[in-house]
Image (tube, rainbow, N blue to C red; front, side):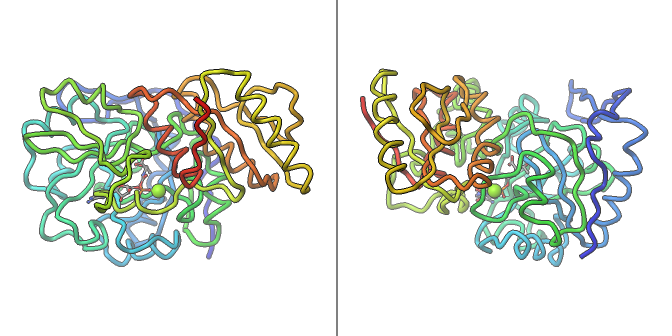
Length: 367
Ligand code: TXA
Ligand code: MG
């Protein structure tokens, strides 16, 4: 398939911002003239039922017309995505929200006003006329207004909601740059808009909202503490982190081994740096004896790892770097990746969830 790289590093071309979001009291910086041609070209491709990848503040999305069942089918084919996994519809204004749902509760309204545009996807009752591929036949549709100016500009140019899962092959780490998108999907999509590196680096928080509670189905940058300010309890779907249960996760995507590098990842929890380094040292020796390559996602302490790429000390830093680092580990054909765990505070739940998924649950507790 002919591949359009709609621009490179267009992030540098942005000048005069203009307001885009129409939620009360909000005005968002977005892009101006030089990009309008790119948006128009991408919107035309979407209108023709093609797939166009684009940057968001979380990860790159693989966009298709959310209301076109044939176009949605192409998303599942390109990503090799299981068909029981529903998509997030991305909107730029309230009018587009109402193309997806006809019921917005007061709590949902407050959440949108507080966190949109931003990394929060909210489940809303799905309109009966939505394509079944968008919701996987579930009663809800997930809706998000991204804050990235390129994402907002594209959705506005298109004029309708854009369905966009992360623009990776299913099971691979999500893409945080246009190059990552092409690594997985070159030849399978009509184009990608290059907006540079994603700021957040992991996918949005997904929540289900009732009058009684806010249920976090997938943790993200908007955390449980943030969501605690609305007067209802905030709970996690028991499938997140190590709290396994027999019940099905409410976000179907959470049941798959996700975000996974090719090598095996171990996440080591310890209060004591010495204990971590002595464990790492032993693992490196053992791996080297059988000819395996080791990556260490912590600042080096001379244990002889083949690749050293610190994840960072804060959850925010780690989120921004994780997927990029996992992709480098794949390129370098690393067999064993070791990272240090994070304290289980609300701000770290999202990174711990991604580490849990990427490691296939391989958490080593030395505490
Ligand atoms: O940050 C993000 O959310 C990125 C960017 C591109 O916006 N998108 C993204 O989409 O991560 P995806 O498809 O990779 O993940 C969507 C998650 C899945 O875990 C899916 O199961 C869940 O949201 N989800 C979507 N619609 C749902 C629904 N109606 N009910 C329950 N879970 C839903
Ligand atoms: Mg995904």
